[in-house]
Image 1 (cartoon, rainbow, N blue to C red):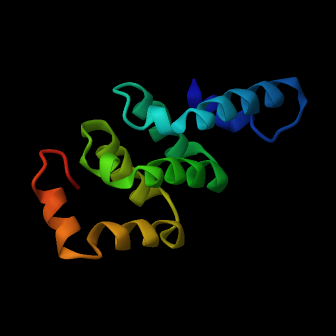
Image 2: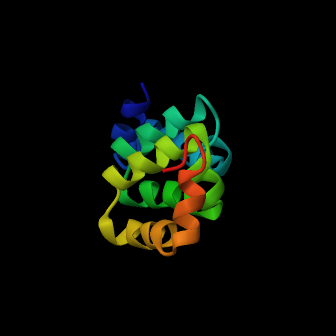
Length: 115
């Protein structure tokens, strides 16, 4: 059903407007959904089926609390999927921040869910 929303976006008409409204509502809550047990599944679908701008919005939500999300059970798996589905130019800064210094890498390896 969520995939259908993305298919409707941008097609014009009332269905497209409704779909866009739902997608924007999801993206407005992206920062909270990143670490939510079920919300992460919604954002995974955004990463798989959404537009480049939708994917960038999810990346921005993840990077706003990057270290916290990188160590979180649900958000860390979402971050991994973002690396798969987002453009390399959009993710390179996040990767550099995560592996840019030894202290950060050590911090990640000390947690159960660290990337």
